[in-house]
Length: 166
Image 1 (cartoon, helix red, strand yellow):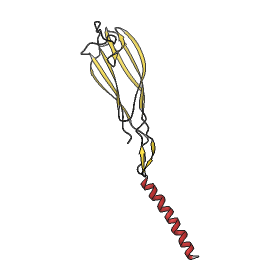
Image 2: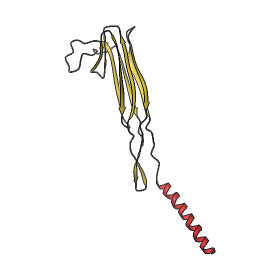
Image 3: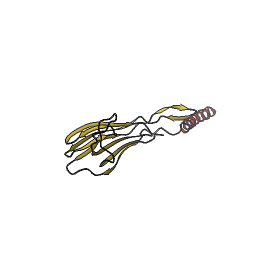
Image 4: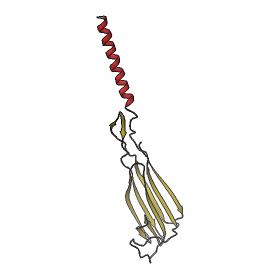
């Protein structure tokens, strides 16, 4: 009887020890978020009476996931895309042009407007939105509509960075 209890006790300790060893070999757990940051770099000036606003509505971190276990270690995926939604609005009273990403004309001369948008980027990458404001270039013959001539009076670059999960 005493021998039988010893065997049961050893079996219980072995099972507990194996469980701990298996947990220790599993490696680090995958992070569940990939932090997103939204930043702006602006230069120049806007004419008095003109306004340009980019309002972020949300900034969403990316998400990490476990792909599986290989050789006793956890294999993590990179994060699923980070994103931000925003509303871009303007009021131009002067004869200036306003464009985004060097090609999309938003306003030529006086007027107001608003445009919803979003930036989305995968893990470890960044995405930019460039806003340009300045004198209109009516002689521009490229594939894009007329946009401010260089050098522009004002520019702003909004950057969404999505960190790495691993």
